Amino acid sequence: MNPKSHWENVYSTKSAERVSWFQEHADRSLRLIGEVAQSPADSIIDIGGGVSTLVDDLLANRFEDLTVLDLSSAALATARNRIGSAADRVTWVEADVLSAALPRHGYDIWHDRAVFHFLTTKAEREAYVEATLNAVKPGGHVIVATFAEDGPVECSGLPVMRYSATELHAEFGTPFRLVRHEKEAHATPFGTVQQFVYCMCRTTETGASIETSR
Ligand SMILES: C[S@@+](CC[C@H](N)C(=O)[O-])C[C@H]1O[C@@H](n2cnc3c(N)ncnc32)[C@H](O)[C@@H]1O
Image (cartoon, rainbow, N blue to C red; front, side, top):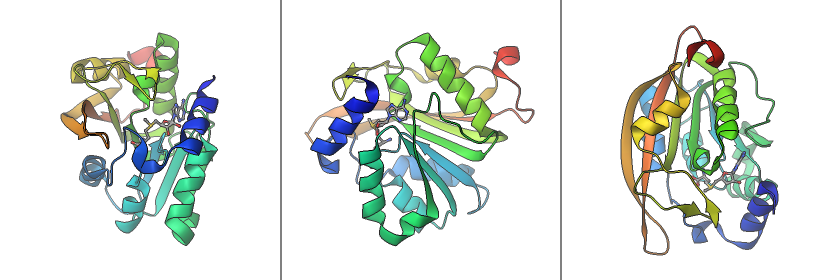
């Protein structure tokens, strides 16, 4: 099954509260975004947002320029329906982050919880980093959360990579300055605990290309 079919199947057959990555509120992500946002007009993209309530809480915090990107149309439809009329204030993008046509330097803040760790080949990870560098404004922020080095070896039945903060930052390279990292013990709806690592980076002011700076 290709990745899109996999994720469409997940979101068509399971409710939001019955997936291991469910959070009632993405509190840590919300706090980290709040720490670096300069104003409610900051443009924020949630990569692989799925049915996360992060976008609901960002709307409630009066952020005005929000984009949610996901492979799964079913996930985006669920999130939109949940939010109701306020969903019209969000840009919804059904796409693969590795090939999405995102605006160059279009975002102040790039957020990804539990997507990057599905990229198990070097070529995929390099394509992701290139997409990030293209889409995030110079001097913008990138918040990426993956399973930590002591986290699970798979998610949703798919193999994943696990990272320490140093290893995760190293995937992005020198155009991304590590501002801070945090670990999180995520309690799943099934009573288990998964270790995550969050890295928050700032891109260089010059927006240096990855080929010349890594
Ligand atoms: C484990 S879920 C995490 C969802 C959400 N970030 C959260 O924390 O609740 C991974 C999400 O990434 C999406 N996804 C996986 N690979 C993707 C890709 N290459 N491009 C865009 N979205 C992707 C899936 O559809 C799914 O919604």
